[in-house]
Image (cartoon, rainbow, N blue to C red):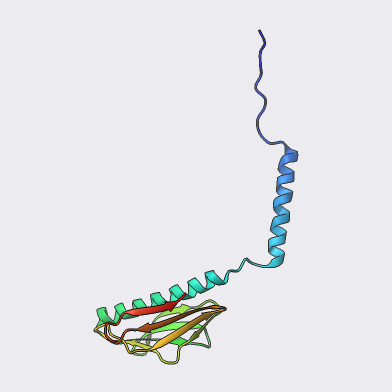
Length: 143
């Protein structure tokens, strides 16, 4: 009869040092190139910020019973939601985003808005946003 002993399981110190050295090399390569940046992520972030601000402004106009204005401050790259002259909400766009906003959006208490169009650019990606004058629905065209 032979007795078998279980082998010790786990990692040796040498294996741990090698894995940490490889991980350190990968980390140093990533830090050398700068932060990982995705234009798609910036575009989606700017798109969501713009659309959610417009939807919130339309809802605020209907619930408060007062006109709500949404305008773009190009100097600060921010979208402002205003009631009269009071700032309700400020949303900052990513620095890569460029928004062409010739006129502000104005939502009336009935949910309708003036037929204004804004165009969002993030490098090669473009989104056109407008409001239907009949229904007040916020429409986005493009990717």
